[in-house]
Image 1 (cartoon, rainbow, N blue to C red):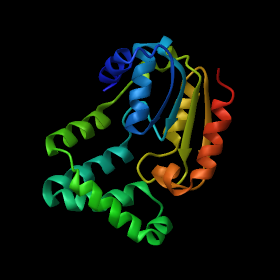
Image 2 (image 1 turned 90 degrees about the horizontal axis):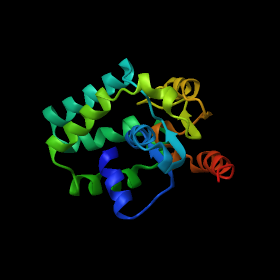
Image 3 (image 1 turned 180 degrees about the vertical axis):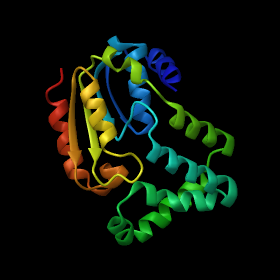
Length: 194
């Protein structure tokens, strides 16, 4: 995916950029930083990781089983459980119903989705982290059900030029569930970047 993104950026003649990626997008950002470090002015990685962990592996396994054994509707319905805090789900039923209808109407090919999950399960840049010198903000959520926040702490300790912000609330998608703290952290970091 990083190679495809590089091709797009090249076709648009983008020489430098700030990159923000959430989960899989964060993994793409790490890969970009390794493939073409001079492209990146900064990185923002939200609920990302550098190598597989047993908790996320269990979540991905469950998601694959839902998709293969129960179909797209069950897969989409379960998505909220992995992304959002319970109280947010309880308070946003109509929105989630609309989101789920949209997701089902545009559901990707199963093989494509399984390949994406496989990429998430097998991504490992652990040995290369010290090569990434791009200024990096890591945003993690203590209540993330999908990716333990300690994965971001590990990245912050391993990357030579990283800052970690841990938010207490918001689940895996705090940019949706509690956007103000997320936006404050993001804007504070970006305001320090050229």
